[in-house]
Length: 516
Image (cartoon, rainbow, N blue to C red):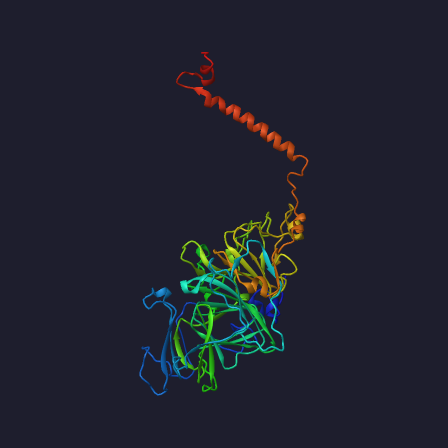
């Protein structure tokens, strides 16, 4: 039989996997930037050849007039595998500014997620959000004004915890940058493409891709070509960093492969002598500094505190190939460790197109009460929500040990005894999940301010599709009574042996009655 030819796919949101695009480059067709590949490296890059010093970090001026500046995200003496730092060689030092001052912002930022804080509350029930509202077209809103905290646990000042955000904006950050001194941002766009300019270079980010910007790195977001507004999700971790999960018996490859993570190349603004405002998030509060030069003036750099991006359509899914339903941990893209060696602070999970091939099995997720809290968001397509309100740009939540599972017609059909044929599932969609061992506390914005929360999340009437088929069966009562009678006879039979007195070679019951 002749083989079928393959035609390259053109829409990344319709592919089964990135390889359907048949690209010879590691980026999508409309990505305008060049990158360096590879997780875990100490990368280096320079705008001008010779700007990067060789065999030393802090050279004397060799003609370019650059200033050496270092940034760390770990202790100086941290073990090598977690020692994080970057050297930058820039036109002006970051220290050259006019000082910090308070600012007013349209953002709703909350970072104190301790039970003593009355501004945050737990949601013990299931919850679901319709798409979070975009800013009105006539109100100019950039990223710094369109960032809103949804939930979290812990506190950045304690260097331990996690926070969830949504962002919605319709304007570029003009002569403005953002610096988060609290934790590492993991950004997942849902609507609109983004130019992400960082001190180390440029990233292009689209729905279906993610990027991580480390604590202290300055950046700004601008709308990509054809985008009039942007919306997406951010997960911030405090006192931890995003890492690749261990693969265990899977071996050296699979899930998010290290070579598929892309890092920027050095880039500087065309005009470096313009006034800039740097909005700084410090201990959950926005302040700002002003300076007379661009923060994007790094001519060369080397190190491992470098923002990076990853295309979720490259995820190499692993799953059950014989029976049953694999735990969702097999879909982990990145993880952030906690102080508990047995439970992560956060896992970032992928739910995208894959084969479903298990035989003799109920292949959908079984009903469960996991110890972890789960926040799901659909980036595009139909997603994995519980109702029609779960749309791209919204979200859903189940707290730890909150019972949940599916209730649609697929559950009714799949439970039947039948032959399981291999099938492709979750096509033309991408859903993400943030899972944490902690209980999320939710902000006033998430509970009330956004205006899109449905606290119940699930209409109780849907469970009528899943009635009690066990006790309703006409033969069940007979079987239960027979089993009860069988157990009584079994117990009576076993009691004979327990009543027998080997020392006196007689039954204990007989001795009690005075007979021999």
